[in-house]
Image 1 (spheres, rainbow, N blue to C red):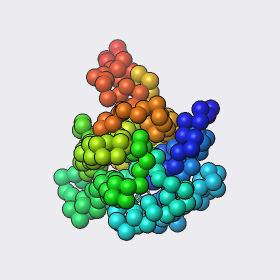
Image 2 (image 1 turned 90 degrees about the horizontal axis):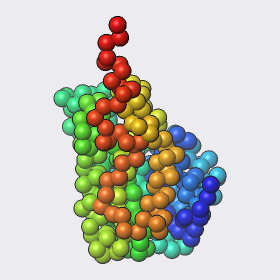
Image 3 (image 1 turned 90 degrees about the vertical axis):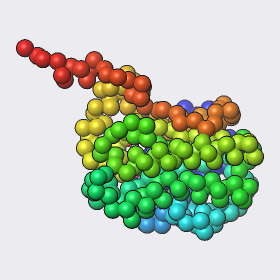
Length: 272
Ligand code: NAI
């Protein structure tokens, strides 16, 4: 169902790799809600993924940008304003990658070159995106910027590895940059802390299937899906949430406030 929540708004959506991507679902929903936007991803992901298909469905253009490259980001922001015909109202940062996770390197045995690369891609890129938008005065007043996070930023999830630290960094950047963006440009900045979701990035985490099943049983409403995340993001892009900023907002079916659930307890109670 469409409510025209983004009618007349212009955006940039990072991170749609394939149809499982949270950014993909968000682009579909943003299009349904009347928003116009540019899609972007790293050049290699554009070659490997299916973003052109999404561009066709949503009538969008694709501009390649490695989110760790300031030059690429500058080019992206300039071109997006040209293509869309004005300043930007909404931005989704949906980017994450850890080489340590990908190559099975344990948290207690990090390859620090990989750790740094992962931090650059997963967390510092969010600062770079915002600094580029801020310096080129590319955001409209009452615009909204959202990045996607995970609860390993606050609690221990052993197999999430260095991505836990990257998410803590990401959430901190949202608050720190969000202050200046709010004060100077009336732009809000938030992170959504999402349930485990079956995507390329999500499934790369060791033991993901067991973990997603555990989270499902712990959450009174069950895990939030990628489309749930897309819908929540749309509300944050809309004018209905104008003074929500500097927040890390849980979209997790209640998981983050649970101690234990009946369904999980059942696995531990003696069955004579
Ligand atoms: P995904 O694999 O579909 O998306 C990750 C995206 O990051 C890909 O499109 C990839 O091309 C992009 N990316 C990687 N390096 C890049 C670079 N240098 N420049 C630009 N883009 C780059 O997976 P998903 O799950 O949709 O991930 C989106 C966000 O949601 C990530 O921040 C992830 O950490 C977060 N998240 C995912 C959860 C899950 O369980 N899937 C749970 C909570 C948060």
